[in-house]
Image (tube, rainbow over all chains, first blue to last red; front, side, top):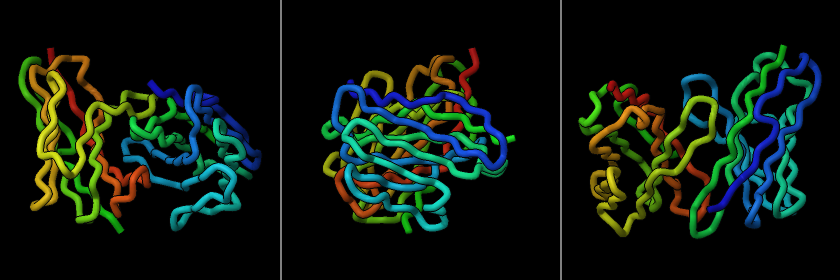
Length: 114
Length: 114
């Protein structure tokens, strides 16, 4: 089946630095990628939707200048958390549309900002 | 916006018993209803889904039922096993857009006791 490879699986960074999270579709072309954030013991909250070659659409309340999304190719989408602060610590998950199979999720990235 | 309510928030059963999780949705245009299983520190995995033109779907020990009139759908797991223990999320595609964004329920922590 379709696989989305997400890296890194976990990252610790200092407050004020930036972190990039990558999601790659390994055996299909992901024209659309969704980015979610999940706080402990909570549900997945959609942050933004990205389509290859165009600007991402952000959900209400999500700062587009802080969470930079790039979807420059059909197999790679990236989320960069800029000037990270402790409140940005969370579990970030990407999800790609895989046509007949629906949606495939990445394995998630645990971000801890210290 | 779309609202998906999921109940119960926690469910504890004995091995071999059945487990039922229920979700209600608000957008009558929704036409795709997936269920995901999420293990600790991992991304969600699709376990079963149903589309609005079907009332019930079954895959071995797992089944999903959909009542469009009442706007609710349920996950049924029979002959539960300890490895079924995880967090389960329901979701729908508010607006009915094919491969559009999903709205998730709050999640159910299922614990199966040996």
